[in-house]
Image (cartoon, rainbow over all chains, first blue to last red):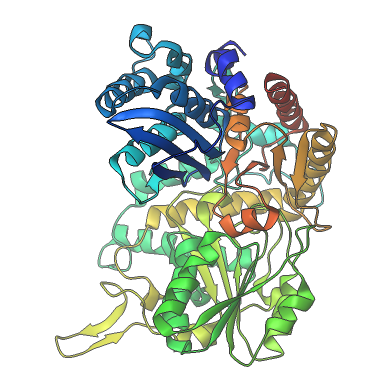
Length: 150
Length: 416
């Protein structure tokens, strides 16, 4: 059970059960939809993006605990960030969930998001952890097509 | 092979002993003894199959049907022997009614692009059921699109049984084929394919049965069913991947045009005109998967020794046990309650997504499938995005199901 606890940390279980920013923010002017065809998970990300800053962000959809918690934590982490700052954070987050399991997690670069580091032991779940992120990237880019993880 | 039969017909199947013949089942997963409950996706291989393939490579491998030397004659004999084995296993009248393909998917594609393309015209219909695997949906969709034909879909009851009245009502003068699974890969339902065939034939409509899930689980006799086509996959039958077979009634197969061109399937070739070989060779273009066929032969021989009645009874007993164990967990909802059902347990767990169920079970050494099971329309029918599925094989035991139930209770606990 210890490895599972490593993956399903209390923070993840909490965000899965009570996702933060699970809403469409008023005045949202950017949105994108994400779909993981492998498991059917769907997420929609809505952003209030003004003067190159994520003023507000919310998400909706249905998915597994990893994708839900990741989306929820992401909305908290990116608020107030510029697009370039978001990209930098996404890169650091991607490194956390795909890095070598033997290596220390660079917690300083991602803060609370480090709770998702357990995903490194489960490569098939990386797509769950990054679905909302890819979707937010698409929203900020102003794209219209549904983002697919495959 | 000089090997005593494992089980005389009518005897119980000793799963512990059967299990001992599968080397991979001695492995661990995430540090725990492996409980393999994903046989509906693909079955593990017994020693007899592994050895048969190795032996073929070491002793008999050569180009088949090019027999100017002894080794090639031997390879050809083994390849054709495998065809005869499949004939016997399915109860077909003649070996030439068996076409080797890659898998059941390719068998259905063959029928779609040869038989379907020739028979379907604008406004014509192919009739399916709501529980079909994508392999028995998409090929028809593609060929219908090309020919201007359309799909009709017979509804199912909540129990996971085909609504026969609905199916009968959808049989029209435009129906050119009924394509139905013998056993559902999600619900486990054993469809009344004999009855469905009778209904279709009464209107002159041929029937294709997707037997990918049925052939490894229950005795199959294509002549007793009366169907025109029957598709199987070797890898679900404890044989190698990349080999499968299509049974097609000789009279229909004779009329069907080739669907792939190349070597082997011709009679003579010039740049002006090619004439084609007879059946089944006409449908086997290129160098075939002879080692796959030999491995499938060994797998069917092995299953024959176990006895398919015994396999079916073993699975029915475990299904009853597993259903009881899962029903005892309040958060678990089972899908598929057909009266006639094989060893497939598809379920959702309240408050836990199917993929998280799969990951928690993985951590307990229990391998199951999670997702849409290549049956997205069926997921939609039951209003779920994904299901978890535990499916049984000849090597599973009561202990495996107890491990499954214990792991599920842990998942519920973890996400409470």
